[in-house]
Length: 292
Image (tube, rainbow, N blue to C red; front, side):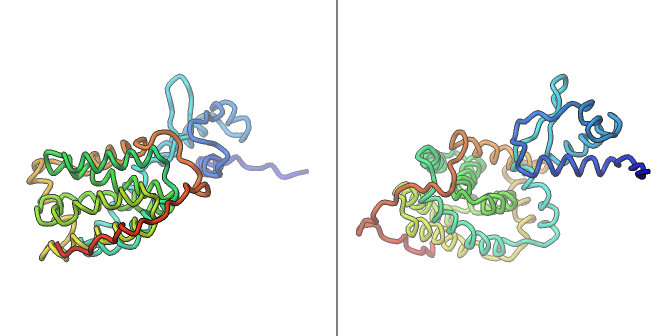
């Protein structure tokens, strides 16, 4: 006789369902089989299936709509922001650390964006530049500033670059609260937003790379002692000054990142389909690596 197989545990059921969701076979919005169907298929009880689904909800993989069933969730920026937040906090991140890593990631993202962005996304990028320039306060300016940078990461069509940027988005926003509160840093970095946008608009990868790199190089010279101070403490000081002692960043950053995800409109095009590069104009010069 064949040995009777013991019933799966909740974690095993959850693991099996998670594998199906993450394998790529189930797209966002796909409705999962009913609890009854899953229970029959897996040979377990419906309460066990319900508990397994609940664990997937907690991990952000599935959402349950009362009366309609369970659906595969789209990958959420919030999922990239939250898990690493406490880890980064324990690492005593400084503005210097963050500027260094942004100088590695974002110029490369801008280079790729210049060949991979859609016209609609480029329009959204130009709109973000306009909104940064017309913003009436630091918080509004910071919201549009991080929207611009998140759009560039998205336009790279590299999910590792995009997810990496999303994972540090809260830190980036904290840094922006400090930099945009400083008129010298703001004045030094402002021209580079337009330079990055125009290079991507002109489909010029090298110019886009140089503009983004110069953008990050320009601001770091004005932080003074804050450059090597705890970014969390620096940001809390600025946030309390702007919004009061009870203000939190997470709700703001999640909302901002959600808004930018739809700024380009609809699904993004495959990375392999590159937009035609325009010939670089002799008049197009590298942005100066400003000390201001």
